[in-house]
Length: 280
Image 1 (cartoon, one colour):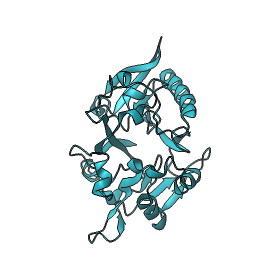
Image 2 (cartoon, one colour):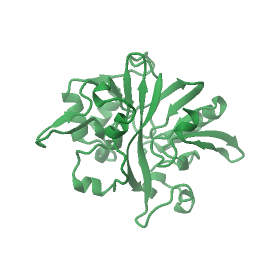
Image 3 (tube, helix red, strand yellow):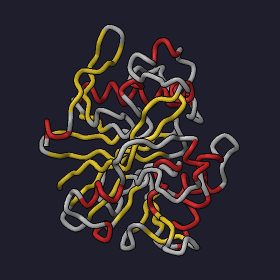
Image 4 (cartoon, helix red, strand yellow):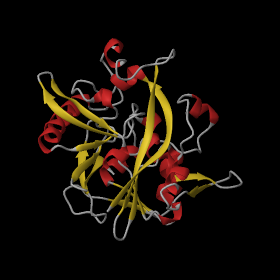
């Protein structure tokens, strides 16, 4: 197995929404806000090369939404999904599978793009299957009013119409051969891969712990549909991460791809921050 971080781009989100009830005076120490109260975030995906598959975990926001849509999220920087993939020596046609942790627009928007005439959508990864789970798919395609703006028809419909949508069942062996952690606080049945690589257990954090600033258990996003469930899931995971010395892959932290945590008198806190080349 080989692993490659894939930067699908940077954007901004409202700091208050990202930290819920936590006061700005606390969260801005780790995630400073601009004059509009927006904080920097990243869409950091992960490419997994196995003996017979090339699996991409999440695809970022994509480029097919309107200028008005992107104006809300203020994309910044030069990184993008396709250039990041090709920089690893692979081509989008090489991707065999796209594992979607969940179907919010900033995690699945890069699966499809416009054709040359801007009249229909075409797959960015034409040879790939797209993996979700049935419970989350039903949740996303029949959204509650709180999450409706995050589950976009332009993202979901092309996946279904492609005929390449596949489901993974919880507590059953999956065809990708990946260990998955299912969590329900942020949204229904988010799937987070756990990978054994070069003596480390790497956990793709998705939106369970989106940035370094979200490590303390009470620091829960306002976007989470079941915040009390997130508290339980985070506490259990962080205790395990400290016990097992997990390496955490941060999908949304703009500066730091990898971290480790440890127990302190205040609870689990950041132990160390790492760039990819420090380990691999």
